Amino acid sequence: MDLEVRERLLALVRESAEKVVQEIDAKGLERLDAVQVVPTKSADHGDFATNAAMVLGKALGCSPREIAERIQRALLDPEGIVAKMEIAGPGFLNFFLARSHWDDLLSRILREGVSFGCSEAGSGRRVMVEFVSANPTGPLTIGHGRNAVLGDSIARLLEATGHEVKREYYFNDGGRQMRVLAQSLRARYEQELGIDSRLPEDGYQGEYLIRVAEQLSAEQERGWLEADEDQFKKRAESAMFADIDRTLKDLGIHFDEYYNEQSLYAEGRVEEALADLKAKGLVYERDGAVWLRSSELGLDRDRVLVKSTEEPTYLLPDIAYHRESLRRGFDTIIDVLGPDHIEQFPYVRAAIQALGGAAERIEVVIYQWVNLRQAGEIVKMSTRKASFITIDKLLDEVGPDVFRYFMIERRGDTHIDFDVELARERSERNPVYKIQYAHARLCSLIRMGESRGITLPAPEEIAWDRLESPTELELAKVLERFPELVTHASEAREPQEVARYLLDLATTFHSYISDGKRHRVLSDDRGLSVARLGLVSAIRTTLANGLKLLGIAAPERM
RNA sequence: GCUCCCGUAGCUCACUUGGAUAGAGCAUUCGCCUCCUAAGCGAAGGGUAGUAGGUUCGAAUCCUACCGGGAGCGCCA
Image (cartoon, rainbow, N blue to C red; front, side):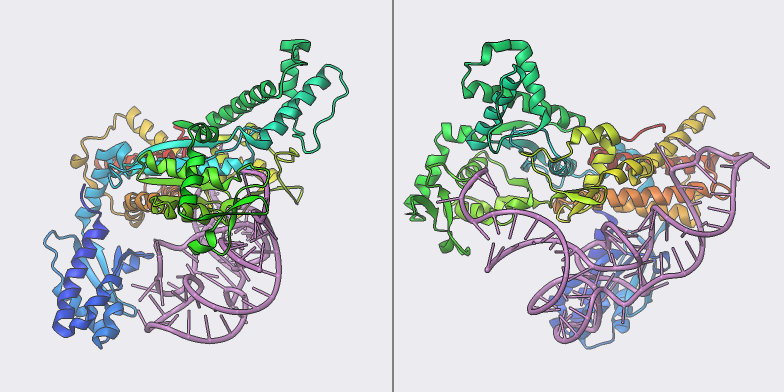
């Protein structure tokens, strides 16, 4: 694919700036890296601007404006990308792009359709995105929902930029939590049968277990009174996973693999990791526990690998898991994790590194917890006490699109206070509706065009030069940003950039279409109608492509 | 004790990874459906960007210190 115009401009500017530097003082060469070309905020400043003259000013000992003039004179533009250049402000060199650029852009969008915005940047790279990874002890909470939406959107962005993506759910159905869950289910089952049975001290109090128990007693009657803990565990686990899967499905999320931590034990990977760490002299015993000598790996203290009860902490299997993932041949492994891992993860990474693993291929996307606000009060969420609102409940009220948008509109590393009442209210008047509404209106225009017999010819045959208003050019300018935005959001693992962008595009469109006196799309002027419908179609394509990256529906009618 | 996040309009948050006059939504006030979907649009008011330094041609953005708020970890995971 062609380079985006910004990159082509940057190359021209650097080339020209280099010549100027050579003429004046070669010492300025090392400043060339700081030269940028960026889209402008205001149309008065053209379409793109470069800071080259300001960056080089000091090194060359000349005024920025003088340098800007020399760069302007030296700039060669064989393709004729630039129609006009201006020097402004403290020394910006502003570029006004040639009309043909915008015409080409609109043609290109129509030609590329669903793949506009996609790239092959990550072609040949295998990436694993490991997310959700909630243990099957209860329904998914809103916090898990943030993880789910974030991970899935990152995966979608990676796919759009050509990566081969595997979505993985890593879980642990061994250990204490699951035993407590099994005991809790047994207690509920016995209660169903009228036996005065109590939940274990720190048992799972959620209502969902009662439902499972009801079903179990209906099926088995008293048949499970002698059942062992393992039977209850398996029963509880499959019920919990059924819940989780349904929720994920409602959110439009699927996984390629469910990876069980227990398999690491079964295959001896955990022992192996411990043995290898021992062989490197990175392990010692104290107080009956086995410690990782992480303070010798540049970290602030040592950590327990195996507790005095002989159970491993999460750290050891995590080291084994990541080693195993690297062996599976991924170029990049992205873990989407809650803030409880912020402090921990460096130890996993350090251990992998010390064992000679490619720790730099492991990336962590940390998100902050979602606080729930009810009647103005922050509610702490705990799975065990069931003091949470499940995603299911919320999805019933606001639907997956609003939920996904809520979870993705902010950067992952900021806190979200999720106000349930507000979410309900806002479900009727919400940014995501504004975006979807724009898409529906665009579709409506296309339908109306068709009903009047106006269909789009091949993109190159559209008389794009009929689009003359500033708003139309502004729209084109917004569309222009999309491919680069997708690339950036993908590389930065920041899907909220897409959400922001879509809102911006939708707003610009609503503004355009509301001024129907000046820009009526469908009119008696057939050529103009075709050109405007072409623009409409390009906007629709871009909105739809962006919504798809976020897993949000693009309705044709509302 | 250690780690992370946040202090920007009355509220919730942006600012394209250091650029030109700091922007949206909500809320408030005032307008717009004989005209392609009013889930929309236009306009007005509202700001010492927590404080103090530093780096830079240029700082809301980077660095340091302090103040204030939120969260996590320290043999549960």
